[in-house]
Image 1: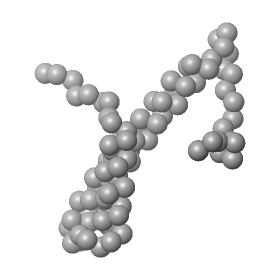
Image 2: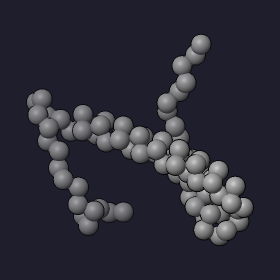
Image 3: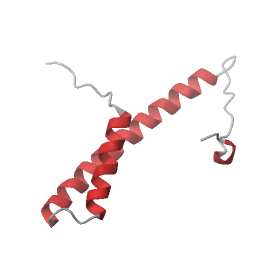
Image 4: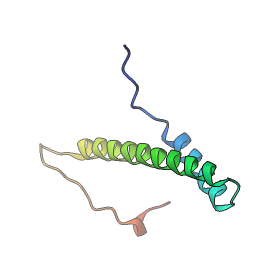
Length: 81
């Protein structure tokens, strides 16, 4: 039995989540559809959070210097985005 891949396409999952939110906000769904969409949205959110945590761990490993963490606090106001 093959192992299930835990790798997700973050951008695709995020886009799906955004579409679900738009449809839920626009009341395009029945109650049953809304509950199903909410459940899917929770799953997508957890997958995205896991992907972000994985990316954060990789960044921490990359900025490690001489076995000591050289992490710099993130200040969103300094971001170019």
